[in-house]
Image (cartoon, rainbow, N blue to C red; front, side, top):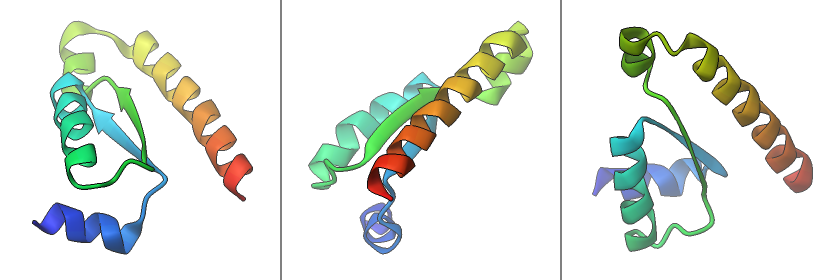
Length: 77
């Protein structure tokens, strides 16, 4: 499986899923691959934002994500 090999090479601390479907799939897939040490975050998919005029919520999600990433990378150095 290429995704498992890519994770082994990149070794991400955080994966950001765009949308519920991707988040749900990754939430199930990551433990099955033995990748439990990755922080999984979710934001709205940009097509949903565009279609349903959710720009303000999207901006808020990005700000929250930015804060979480700062905390993650500050802790780990």
